[in-house]
Image (cartoon, rainbow, N blue to C red):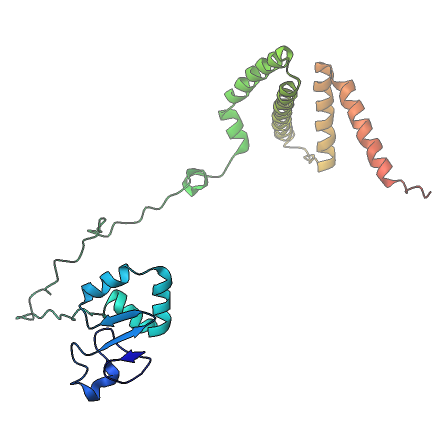
Length: 260
């Protein structure tokens, strides 16, 4: 860079040449200016400098940044950092409350007082509700089974009337799911009935030696009762055929693989 003060250096302030402090008479106010690639900046006001920079293209600004340095470029574009003075609010009397500035923005949501945090609890797992009794639950909501039974009958009619094959398969899957749920509920009711019969048997034979049922004997009794229900509904043959196929599949898995 070429300066009117006669010295050449790579650093110069936009407002004043700091490298020419020893020749301040030559570099005051109107002396300091530099030029480079047709660019000339004198000691101008901040507004005039910003106007000059706003008229320059992006390439010229980038070239200026590389030539004068990033620090000087930021001073030219953004101006010098003017830090706000740190004001310490003092009190004439130490017992007075502290004086705060009124220019500080008040938050939208202010916490006036500390509210107690609400503790959310699930009543299903509350200790005051007692232990879960599955049998009592089924007896209390037994009307749901009647609603499901009516819905299943309506679903059977929908399957018969449906013409779309894909939609019909979806309805059949839903119908099968409802039938499985109904069968599960019947088995649970059967177990409850067997428990009642066993409890009554123990009460009647309290004086004699009680006969306790193990899991195997209990399972046989439940299976016999299930066969009676299936025979009454006319589904015993279908159930036995299904069990036979299932047993055949188990036996095939045990057979060794044939080597070809």
